Amino acid sequence: MDSITPISGQSSTGEQSRASVKVSVQKVKGLNSFPAEEFLAVEEPLEIQLVHGPSNARAMKSISVTMRTPGDDFELAAGFLMTEGVVRDINDVERITYAPESMASAPESDAWQQSALPYQPRLNKVRVELSPEVEVSLANLERNFYTTSSCGICGKASLLALQTVCPARIRNSFAINANILYTLPSRLRESQSVFDRTGGLHGAGLFNADGKLLAMREDVGRHNAVDKLLGSEFLADRTPLRHALLLLSGRASFELLQKALMGGVFMVASVGAPSSLAVQVAREFDIILVGFLRDDHFNIYHGAEHIKGKTAV
Image 1 (cartoon, one colour):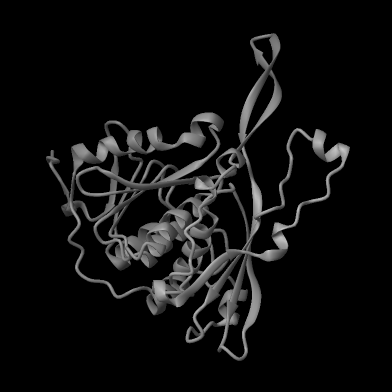
Image 2 (image 1 turned 180 degrees about the vertical axis):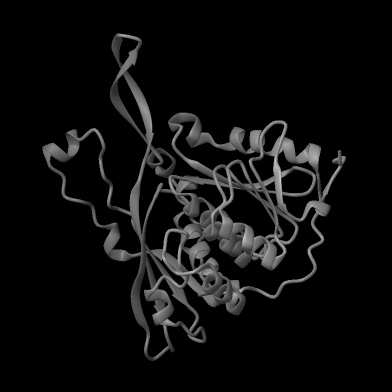
């Protein structure tokens, strides 16, 4: 594992600037219009390549292309593989690098240079090399391992799939005070530096029971923000995350509860609504689930006894 360089896009030179781009716009207030400049969140594809197999017969396969905000790319790849059940331990991963062919400079033309929204193809392919002992099911990868909440597969099949691959669960002992819970959305929002410039990114944060922000990631994709966050903890060998609460800046879908389950998270809170299948996952796997978390109200969908300081009326 010493060969893994924990390069994250937003902490690398120049990568923070890739997360947003300035564009010229016309603003309209009432019937008056005027020119202005705005920042947009950058959205670019990231290809995740997997190198696997015994030492004498290594194979490489592109397993996913996701639209993401550049930054924390290694963590995104690691989090994706962990939450999809491809890797279970930090020792399953030998090396994470940018794919060599992605380092070549893109051809530049006058039109390219003058574009208001420049596409930067460099650093858009990440290669994850697994240990030779790790067995990979290509059939699972080709069907993306799980369905998403927009797929047609039934909820029962999705829950059964999770039961076969999720980490061993222990009794849920996480608890938090309601007064602390109310403070978390603003703390997450205050930490979102790119959102401040663009207004267009989802955030995911890990908090302890005292309300301390442990880590935060943001991305144009809700699932990417969670993969980056859980991937950073996986690469730091801090999973399963039984001591932490996962806060989502948007809604809680089946896919995000699946990722929380695979990361060993015991509580998920979202500013938005959960889906019906997300609630089923929470109840099936004993994940405390809170939705519509705002300044003075929230809904508890599972695990009410774990939230202290409230009074029944």
